[in-house]
Amino acid sequence: MIFIENEGNTDPKLNLALEEYALRNFSAENDYLLFYINEPSIIIGRNQNTLEEVNQQYVEDNNIHIVRRVSGGGAVYHDFGNLNFSFITNHDVKSLSNFKKFTAPVIKVLNSLGLSAELKGRNDIQVDEKKISGTAQFSTGKRMVSHGTLLLDTDLGEVVNALNVKMSKIESKGHKSVRSRVANISEFLEKPLSIEEFRQLVLEGLYEDSEAFERYHLTPEEWKAVHQLKEEKYDTWEWNYGRSPKFNIQRSKRFPIGEIDVRIFVEKGHITNFKIFGDFFGKEPVEKLEQLLTGSRYEQSSIWELLKDVEMKEYFGEIQKADFIELVYGEDV
Image (cartoon, rainbow, N blue to C red):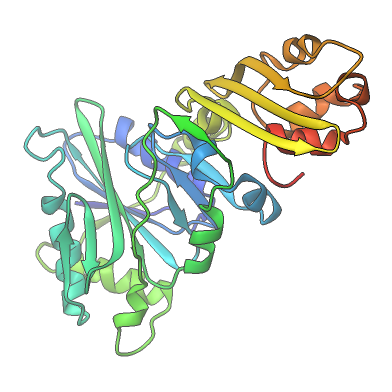
């Protein structure tokens, strides 16, 4: 087993790019272990609808990163109190979806720290019926990554805030995260540990059953390739939002000028069909607005830009543009 040094990087987009680069490019003759700690971020499962999983306004206001990972499963919150581990190995049909195999050494380390940790369900590590770790896997067909979280001292309040979705009446073909009771590992420890101390203890614990891991530092050329992958994939709106499965939104609200009911169909993050109904009175046909918004990214800034020169009263009577955009996109504008 070779331990990959991530050089203390806390950018989730860079760390996920590093993980994928190692998965696809490092020698198949070796197994690899990678640890990383991320700045506050929501990591979205490969098959999820990003807009359905996050409180978009909250994450924007609080500078929380949103990044899609290559593996499936649900959305998770990362911050400086969470240690992420990643095992990169050869693809093995028996190992794929065998979370017990990859969590066993981690559970052994946690037990050595005095925790009664065990794998519950398909892929969660729990202590006293509370989830302290979630895991996921991805395979290229030749190589595979099995990775997970270890919640040492995460701000659990932020987990609720960042993943608390305010949208109404949204139907999706994606996989919505299962909300479960979570706890921090620190709650079960006799004495407090910093995330750095915890990281070292877990690493030393994983050493016990084998010789000390070789430590590998990427070359400048390899780091250049990792940064390129980050820029071309993990930095992009298309990857983090545009890959969201198809979904429909129906939202309505009664204003002094009457009720406005919008029906929005979104595919790959873009509005593909937009319809407006209601009992309002307007001078201009709403079909013009429908055509204007069709094709737009389903994001607040894009909608604002398209409507910046539009006089809303021409279509609905006396209504504020911010109120209409709030109806179309989210609770807070």
